[in-house]
Image (tube, rainbow, N blue to C red; front, side, top):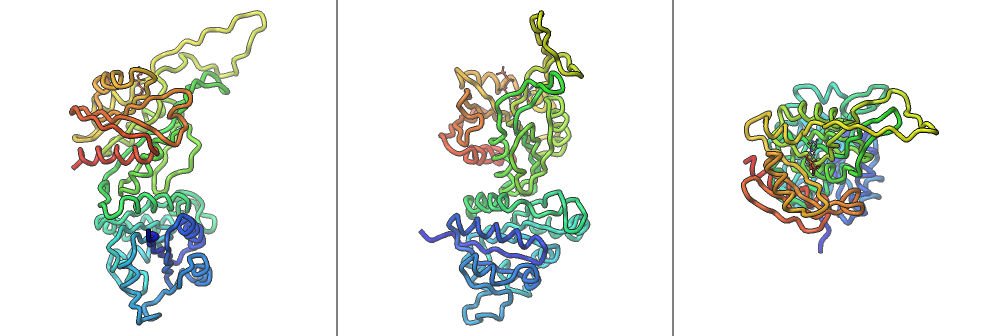
Length: 400
Ligand code: CTP
């Protein structure tokens, strides 16, 4: 089989050096990569580096190798174009259909999916001109990854950092896997909760659960690759932030509820993949609970936590909002799942079997998605991303 052909557009920002790692990841995972830098990108990383790492010739202008008509051929032959970093200037030229160098010509001739990973100073990102250009590109079907928040060039911090190259690579992989399929969540805001809540007993102890957050992160990543704006509410996870996703940390069930309600206010869909503790200790000891040699330990008294999924399902923030729950069951899985779907009032319930060595922390999953309208979609054993794609297929069908 031919290697998938990827065009890596690099524009002139300091983050250009991070595109070297993206390039390595793409080539090492079996992609044929043609790097098309802008002239200003070469101020940051030279053509020799791009050529050596990609194993392909590198040009910035349409006047090199004219007999091969590169300004048309490179775009036509691509399975994916990814521009990382995409500067404000490159986004503007792409949005307006300019064709004044090889990269912009390639963007006009490409008929494959296009991913932009912008990087710039916060002021430039937030400027209405840039925001309108991004909206135009998204409306036309491009995936524009939200920049990360953090240290920028110099001493500034804010939104505008290029996301981690490993995460941009994940977006590329997902977009390539979807092929020519439209980014069907473009223009949508989706909220995903992930991980497991921790309910503190005292400053050093908590009641928690085994959820790693991997399924929720897979949902966030796949939704971003399908064009959605994603808010990921992360409860006690130790996973890298997915590219282009707004990550909101939450510790306890009460904090998670607050974050979910806030984000759900303008969301098209909410997926509750987090394992939320049903109960929390009735009392919190402000000092560490000490053992007393001559006494049995005090019993821990628990009180109920709010049921977030039931609450947002009963009181939808927007008409037509699609709500998805997860059910972790250890026995009689389907019967419990059906009863839970009715009890929670959500539209879809992903039912999977859990146990000490099943699902929690694993890379793979097996489930059945039950729908309130009677549908039942079995998901065979496979990667958590495959289950995530099926969940979004079912959500997208309900949104359209
Ligand atoms: N959930 C929630 N708030 C809670 C408990 C659970 O929003 N307080 C959500 C979870 O995020 C998940 C779904 O409800 O999407 C099902 O969670 P699960 O623990 O399986 O269900 P429970 O309601 O706790 O039912 P039970 O413990 O009786 O099985």
